Image 1 (cartoon, rainbow, N blue to C red):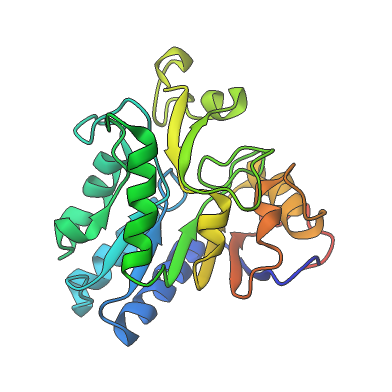
Image 2: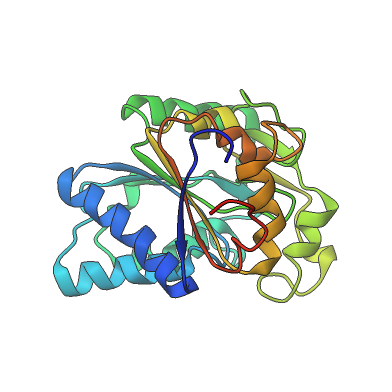
Length: 250
Protein backbone atom coordinates (compact mmCIF):
# COMPACT_ATOMS: atom_id res chain seq x y z
CA UNK A 1 0.00 0.00 0.00
CA UNK A 2 1.31 3.44 -0.91
CA UNK A 3 1.63 6.22 1.63
CA UNK A 4 -0.26 6.70 4.86
CA UNK A 5 -3.84 6.00 3.74
CA UNK A 6 -5.69 3.83 6.24
CA UNK A 7 -8.36 1.48 4.92
CA UNK A 8 -11.64 0.49 6.55
CA UNK A 9 -13.32 -2.09 4.33
CA UNK A 10 -16.97 -2.69 5.19
CA UNK A 11 -19.29 -5.45 4.05
CA UNK A 12 -22.04 -3.08 2.93
CA UNK A 13 -22.63 0.50 1.81
CA UNK A 14 -24.83 0.97 4.90
CA UNK A 15 -21.90 0.11 7.13
CA UNK A 16 -19.73 2.61 5.24
CA UNK A 17 -22.28 5.34 5.91
CA UNK A 18 -22.61 4.47 9.59
CA UNK A 19 -18.84 4.34 10.14
CA UNK A 20 -18.43 7.78 8.59
CA UNK A 21 -21.31 9.27 10.58
CA UNK A 22 -19.87 7.81 13.79
CA UNK A 23 -16.49 9.43 13.11
CA UNK A 24 -18.10 12.85 12.76
CA UNK A 25 -20.36 12.28 15.76
CA UNK A 26 -17.37 11.34 17.91
CA UNK A 27 -15.55 14.51 16.83
CA UNK A 28 -18.56 16.72 17.58
CA UNK A 29 -19.12 15.09 20.97
CA UNK A 30 -15.48 15.69 21.85
CA UNK A 31 -15.50 19.26 20.52
CA UNK A 32 -18.88 20.91 20.24
CA UNK A 33 -17.50 23.72 18.06
CA UNK A 34 -15.81 21.38 15.58
CA UNK A 35 -15.12 22.57 12.04
CA UNK A 36 -16.18 19.96 9.53
CA UNK A 37 -15.85 19.69 5.77
CA UNK A 38 -18.68 18.12 3.79
CA UNK A 39 -19.21 16.57 0.37
CA UNK A 40 -22.19 16.11 -1.91
CA UNK A 41 -23.22 13.38 -4.33
CA UNK A 42 -25.00 10.09 -3.79
CA UNK A 43 -22.36 8.38 -1.62
CA UNK A 44 -22.55 10.64 1.48
CA UNK A 45 -26.36 10.83 1.52
CA UNK A 46 -26.72 7.84 3.84
CA UNK A 47 -24.09 9.28 6.18
CA UNK A 48 -26.07 12.50 6.45
CA UNK A 49 -29.24 10.53 7.14
CA UNK A 50 -27.42 8.76 9.97
CA UNK A 51 -26.09 12.07 11.36
CA UNK A 52 -29.65 13.41 11.34
CA UNK A 53 -30.83 10.28 13.16
CA UNK A 54 -28.10 10.68 15.78
CA UNK A 55 -29.23 14.29 16.29
CA UNK A 56 -32.86 13.24 16.61
CA UNK A 57 -32.41 10.12 18.72
CA UNK A 58 -29.29 10.82 20.79
CA UNK A 59 -29.18 14.61 21.00
CA UNK A 60 -26.04 15.05 18.91
CA UNK A 61 -25.89 18.83 18.54
CA UNK A 62 -24.59 20.78 15.56
CA UNK A 63 -25.47 24.14 17.14
CA UNK A 64 -21.85 25.26 17.52
CA UNK A 65 -20.45 23.35 14.53
CA UNK A 66 -19.05 25.19 11.50
CA UNK A 67 -19.14 23.45 8.11
CA UNK A 68 -17.52 24.04 4.73
CA UNK A 69 -18.67 22.31 1.56
CA UNK A 70 -16.20 21.20 -1.08
CA UNK A 71 -17.79 22.70 -4.14
CA UNK A 72 -20.72 24.25 -5.97
CA UNK A 73 -21.85 24.38 -9.58
CA UNK A 74 -20.98 27.68 -11.22
CA UNK A 75 -24.13 29.42 -12.38
CA UNK A 76 -26.58 27.74 -9.99
CA UNK A 77 -28.09 29.67 -7.10
CA UNK A 78 -28.75 28.03 -3.77
CA UNK A 79 -32.47 27.73 -4.54
CA UNK A 80 -31.84 25.57 -7.65
CA UNK A 81 -32.75 21.97 -6.87
CA UNK A 82 -29.45 20.71 -8.31
CA UNK A 83 -27.25 23.17 -6.44
CA UNK A 84 -25.14 21.82 -3.63
CA UNK A 85 -26.52 24.40 -1.21
CA UNK A 86 -29.98 22.98 -1.89
CA UNK A 87 -28.63 19.42 -1.51
CA UNK A 88 -27.08 20.15 1.88
CA UNK A 89 -30.16 21.97 3.15
CA UNK A 90 -32.37 19.07 2.04
CA UNK A 91 -30.17 16.16 3.18
CA UNK A 92 -28.67 17.49 6.41
CA UNK A 93 -28.98 21.09 7.52
CA UNK A 94 -32.75 21.25 7.89
CA UNK A 95 -32.71 18.01 9.91
CA UNK A 96 -30.23 19.17 12.58
CA UNK A 97 -29.65 22.28 14.66
CA UNK A 98 -26.92 23.72 12.45
CA UNK A 99 -26.90 27.52 12.51
CA UNK A 100 -27.34 28.80 8.93
CA UNK A 101 -24.55 31.36 9.26
CA UNK A 102 -22.10 28.58 10.17
CA UNK A 103 -22.84 26.46 7.07
CA UNK A 104 -20.56 27.68 4.30
CA UNK A 105 -21.26 26.67 0.71
CA UNK A 106 -19.61 28.49 -2.17
CA UNK A 107 -21.96 30.88 -3.99
CA UNK A 108 -22.44 29.64 -7.54
CA UNK A 109 -23.99 32.98 -8.48
CA UNK A 110 -21.20 35.16 -7.08
CA UNK A 111 -20.46 38.04 -9.43
CA UNK A 112 -16.71 37.72 -8.96
CA UNK A 113 -15.70 34.06 -8.59
CA UNK A 114 -12.10 34.82 -7.64
CA UNK A 115 -13.27 36.97 -4.72
CA UNK A 116 -15.76 34.29 -3.66
CA UNK A 117 -13.03 31.65 -3.64
CA UNK A 118 -10.62 33.87 -1.73
CA UNK A 119 -13.33 34.63 0.84
CA UNK A 120 -13.98 30.90 1.27
CA UNK A 121 -10.30 30.29 2.01
CA UNK A 122 -10.24 33.24 4.42
CA UNK A 123 -13.25 31.91 6.32
CA UNK A 124 -11.53 28.55 6.79
CA UNK A 125 -8.43 30.30 8.13
CA UNK A 126 -10.54 32.50 10.42
CA UNK A 127 -11.95 29.48 12.26
CA UNK A 128 -8.57 27.78 12.56
CA UNK A 129 -8.89 25.26 9.74
CA UNK A 130 -11.00 22.17 9.15
CA UNK A 131 -10.86 19.40 11.76
CA UNK A 132 -12.27 16.62 9.57
CA UNK A 133 -13.26 16.70 5.92
CA UNK A 134 -15.55 14.18 4.23
CA UNK A 135 -14.66 13.34 0.64
CA UNK A 136 -15.99 11.28 -2.22
CA UNK A 137 -14.12 10.08 -5.28
CA UNK A 138 -15.01 10.19 -8.95
CA UNK A 139 -14.48 7.41 -11.42
CA UNK A 140 -11.42 9.26 -12.75
CA UNK A 141 -10.05 9.75 -9.22
CA UNK A 142 -11.20 13.34 -8.80
CA UNK A 143 -11.85 14.74 -5.33
CA UNK A 144 -14.24 17.68 -5.06
CA UNK A 145 -14.10 18.99 -8.64
CA UNK A 146 -10.32 18.66 -8.85
CA UNK A 147 -10.03 16.80 -12.12
CA UNK A 148 -6.89 14.87 -13.20
CA UNK A 149 -4.04 17.33 -13.71
CA UNK A 150 -5.02 19.51 -10.74
CA UNK A 151 -1.87 20.59 -8.86
CA UNK A 152 -1.22 19.24 -5.39
CA UNK A 153 -1.05 22.81 -4.05
CA UNK A 154 -4.19 24.07 -5.84
CA UNK A 155 -6.51 26.40 -3.95
CA UNK A 156 -10.24 27.11 -4.15
CA UNK A 157 -10.97 28.27 -7.68
CA UNK A 158 -13.25 28.16 -10.71
CA UNK A 159 -12.66 24.91 -12.62
CA UNK A 160 -13.89 23.27 -15.82
CA UNK A 161 -15.54 19.86 -15.48
CA UNK A 162 -14.29 16.91 -17.50
CA UNK A 163 -16.51 15.16 -20.03
CA UNK A 164 -16.48 12.08 -17.77
CA UNK A 165 -17.70 14.06 -14.76
CA UNK A 166 -20.43 15.74 -16.82
CA UNK A 167 -21.59 12.36 -18.10
CA UNK A 168 -21.49 10.82 -14.62
CA UNK A 169 -23.66 13.61 -13.22
CA UNK A 170 -26.26 13.22 -15.96
CA UNK A 171 -27.18 9.57 -15.36
CA UNK A 172 -30.59 10.40 -13.93
CA UNK A 173 -29.55 10.71 -10.28
CA UNK A 174 -29.03 14.44 -10.65
CA UNK A 175 -29.40 15.82 -14.19
CA UNK A 176 -31.28 13.79 -16.81
CA UNK A 177 -29.50 15.34 -19.79
CA UNK A 178 -25.75 16.07 -20.17
CA UNK A 179 -26.68 19.40 -21.74
CA UNK A 180 -28.17 20.49 -18.43
CA UNK A 181 -25.02 19.86 -16.37
CA UNK A 182 -23.03 23.05 -15.71
CA UNK A 183 -19.61 23.04 -17.39
CA UNK A 184 -17.80 24.79 -14.54
CA UNK A 185 -17.79 24.72 -10.76
CA UNK A 186 -16.25 26.44 -7.78
CA UNK A 187 -14.12 23.90 -5.95
CA UNK A 188 -11.88 23.72 -2.93
CA UNK A 189 -8.38 22.95 -4.15
CA UNK A 190 -6.34 19.87 -3.35
CA UNK A 191 -4.03 22.05 -1.28
CA UNK A 192 -7.04 23.41 0.61
CA UNK A 193 -8.31 19.89 1.32
CA UNK A 194 -4.90 18.58 2.36
CA UNK A 195 -4.66 21.23 5.09
CA UNK A 196 -7.53 19.65 7.06
CA UNK A 197 -6.41 17.85 10.21
CA UNK A 198 -8.25 14.69 9.18
CA UNK A 199 -9.74 13.30 5.98
CA UNK A 200 -12.33 10.58 5.43
CA UNK A 201 -12.98 9.42 1.87
CA UNK A 202 -16.02 7.26 1.10
CA UNK A 203 -16.50 4.93 -1.85
CA UNK A 204 -19.06 2.25 -2.58
CA UNK A 205 -19.69 0.03 -5.55
CA UNK A 206 -17.62 -1.64 -8.21
CA UNK A 207 -17.62 1.49 -10.40
CA UNK A 208 -15.24 3.11 -7.92
CA UNK A 209 -12.87 0.12 -7.66
CA UNK A 210 -10.35 1.26 -10.28
CA UNK A 211 -10.18 4.77 -8.81
CA UNK A 212 -9.67 3.40 -5.30
CA UNK A 213 -6.89 1.08 -6.48
CA UNK A 214 -5.16 3.96 -8.26
CA UNK A 215 -5.52 6.25 -5.24
CA UNK A 216 -4.24 3.74 -2.68
CA UNK A 217 -1.75 1.61 -4.60
CA UNK A 218 -0.85 3.74 -7.60
CA UNK A 219 1.80 6.44 -7.77
CA UNK A 220 1.47 9.84 -6.09
CA UNK A 221 0.34 11.61 -9.24
CA UNK A 222 -1.90 14.40 -10.52
CA UNK A 223 -3.26 11.79 -12.94
CA UNK A 224 -5.31 10.47 -9.99
CA UNK A 225 -6.10 13.42 -7.70
CA UNK A 226 -7.10 11.18 -4.79
CA UNK A 227 -3.60 9.68 -4.79
CA UNK A 228 -2.36 13.09 -3.66
CA UNK A 229 -3.76 12.21 -0.22
CA UNK A 230 -1.20 9.42 0.24
CA UNK A 231 1.16 11.53 2.35
CA UNK A 232 -1.54 13.08 4.55
CA UNK A 233 -1.01 12.48 8.25
CA UNK A 234 -4.57 11.34 9.01
CA UNK A 235 -6.46 10.03 6.00
CA UNK A 236 -8.90 7.10 6.09
CA UNK A 237 -10.73 5.54 3.16
CA UNK A 238 -13.98 3.91 4.29
CA UNK A 239 -15.10 1.68 1.43
CA UNK A 240 -17.26 -1.35 0.80
CA UNK A 241 -16.06 -4.70 -0.50
CA UNK A 242 -17.06 -3.87 -4.08
CA UNK A 243 -15.02 -0.65 -4.10
CA UNK A 244 -12.09 -2.59 -2.62
CA UNK A 245 -12.24 -5.36 -5.21
CA UNK A 246 -9.31 -4.12 -7.33
CA UNK A 247 -6.90 -3.66 -4.42
CA UNK A 248 -4.06 -6.17 -4.33
CA UNK A 249 -3.48 -5.75 -0.58
CA UNK A 250 -6.35 -5.26 1.89
